[in-house]
Image (cartoon, rainbow, N blue to C red):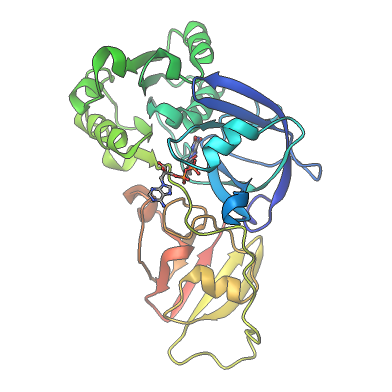
Length: 354
Ligand SMILES: Cc1cc2nc3c(=O)[nH]c(=O)nc-3n(C[C@H](O)[C@H](O)[C@H](O)COP(=O)(O)OP(=O)(O)OC[C@H]3O[C@@H](n4cnc5c(N)ncnc54)[C@H](O)[C@@H]3O)c2cc1C
């Protein structure tokens, strides 16, 4: 199934709800009736969580990483941990039940394993284990790559997937090393302590880091301290969306190629879903808006430069990104850019969405 059309929601039926830990549940979804959703380990769904009747909000859009692994799991699974004072996480933990249908945008995100890595270092805290678990299981099942997992939690009761991680460590003891960092025993994680648990890296060792911002800072510092190349340290930030990616974006009336281009507009050649379109790109509009204004079904989720859901490859020309909180130097070097943040820098630009 075409999973790149991020603006197109799929109704997903919950077929199971699993208590994973003190404050976390997994929601298991059947694939949509119209076809299975393709995804890569580490990607996320964007769910439309029913809104609070008291404030009249119709829904809260929230991203949840897939903890299931493509090729290994029949169904889609996300794992939600309660956020203190948060709306959607608590609503899902309290109300989700089999038979409930939630709309979801197609899987998205760039926190995935790309390219060869001769060793993986996985550093997770709390709900940050969710995409990491998918990456871990996929790696163990499909390669001989050695993996080091360090997983931080408040205490033993807060550990998500405890039994599943123990089973993996038993099965792959020759190449999987697991350390649980429990605050109740060791205090808060710090970079020196985390670094002491990590292996000596080789040239292509890659680190994947997910958890609260403070944890990610010291985990990334630990990975850098043992010598992992900065371009191979990947982070996934968990934050709530402020915009609504489910809102439909009406094309601008009369915005077609027959209209006169605005003064000084750039021209962009876009490869999207296998079709090539040439259109004018007003200089003050980000690429995503220029595409949606023309009625093109470009992918996006957060529209804030955070999630990577609108990433494209720059084939020629130059763009300026206003915000980039997700792409690393390696990706930038390979021409990856964010459509929700890109303004044209040259008169002619060519881009390709995957
Ligand atoms: C790519 C991605 C993947 C993610 N994957 C996961 C996952 O696998 N599992 C998971 O559990 N989460 C995940 N998240 C986080 C998830 O999307 C939500 O952000 C999280 O569940 C909290 O949402 P919430 O509605 O419960 O909290 P919110 O209602 O958004 O509140 C968040 C915090 O802000 C505070 N707050 C809310 N409103 C106000 C206000 N007006 N003033 C001051 N403070 C306020 C709340 O008290 C709370 O502490 C992911 C996020 C992203 C971007």
